[in-house]
Figure 1: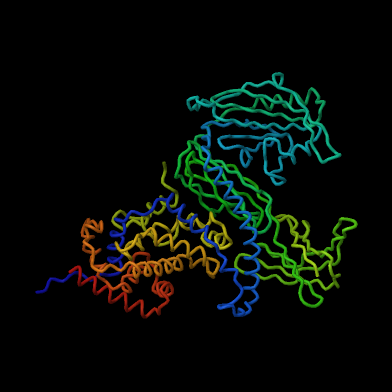
Figure 2 (figure 1 turned 45 degrees about the horizontal axis):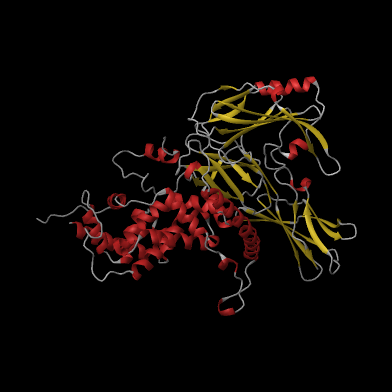
Length: 435
Length: 194
């Protein structure tokens, strides 16, 4: 009788090959990330080539393809600039020995009527920060900093804004001791801060305190909405300082985004750090888009030395981004987006405007404007409603046609206003074009 | 540190006797919103492309290593695959089909590398760094003895777990060709392992 090996069915074959593959050591996440970055540095210029082989004119692409190419060209220009800048920033940041993120961070105990923001603040590496105000803090207006102009310029006379940043004390052993930070406004250096547009400046009282507590060097700035604060206002500021504590940040991951107000297709440079400074840790980037109430993972980054991570992403609609590790989740950073608006001068009297977004703007109004150099203003020429709204993958192409007779040499643009775009987008402005 | 959430979920779902999908899962990690990540990478997001490389790179590397054998460095071929994928990603129509599409690029790049570095004589397995645990040396030799066209079908179908249609699309051949190559490869492996 012949000795026969059992037939290799699909499952047996899968098991055999899996066992074999397990003996091969795959590249680490770090190596894969480096390989992907190197690959993504390659040009995609062939995508934008419209001419055929050997110089022969290419077949005219279909309409969606033409749009895709136009968008790709537009994005290409934006990305080359944006990513280039982002990369140079990243390279600079990565090449420096960045300080570790401390394992403790400043925070405020909650109090009614006060808004507190603990993330998305543009601070130097190795720094934790927290902001508090007795008015809402608008994270949309500009990247939050320790003295955000948008908040200070609109601070009411009885308003109080407190910014606290903390860095690890150099050379000190890592502390995890938590507790209150005794501070009093009486010890502060007093100054005057001028805010507001030129010609409309107003003075705010500023108090600066520096202290060392629980292993942190703390920098505290208190802004009051007037240069002559009342006793009640000073008491309110002192009460908020009394709520300052140092908390554990052992599992913290931070995120900062730049810019936070983006045009369609504009990349956002993201950076942050994980507490403990571990390299090779995976950081998931999650997005919560306007109109939804859930978070989705859309990107990932790997921490480098010092626990720093860098990434670059895009959003198609306003929303929030946050970073997540196995141990913790960052505070969200708000991103506000404008739709893409493209103005095309067609042959004949027609001018086409295309609004690109992830939402349909069907029946919403777009305005054609001309530039009046003498008045240095944009003057409305014609208003039309979006008549076509087509889906192409995840994008919606909203189109309308202007029929107004255009003057040669005059500069035109198209605008979709805030009211027309609704709550998930800011107003969008097209490229400028001449007939 | 806790294992990464998606990996942990996958580990829990698998009985101990089964091959561990945490090593070579058949499908992408549930963590990623694949169409969205692919869309971002198509738009030019380096970070999204990095996420895709992290999700699929290890599996691709193992496929390439088995496909090209000791003749070429699988990491170099993986790098070529990633460059080609980045360049042609905007032309991918259906983001859901990203994985078979990527596997097809890897198969082509591996075939190129195999042609470039075709050895004049079979390398001694020990010199080639092959080790054999639990009879895998015999499997490795049997696989290496298969004609390249059959080997890539076997690896795509049974290592990367692509369907017959996906394998056919990845290699640019008909489904019938995939079926016949898989059947012949299976018979050859049975003979070799007898």
